[in-house]
Length: 49
Image (cartoon, rainbow, N blue to C red; front, side, top):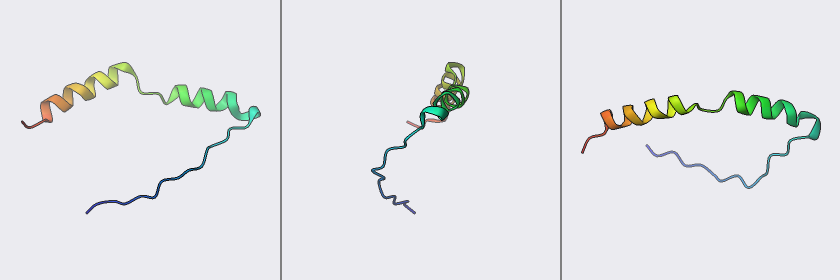
């Protein structure tokens, strides 16, 4: 079954007062380089050619 989504053409606006908190949360939730490397390795193991 295919999932169909409607594109959203709205911009998210972050208020000046909340920008510092947003940046902290964004940086905390960033994917680490180590995690990306492990995903690439797992992808190579699971890929069928």
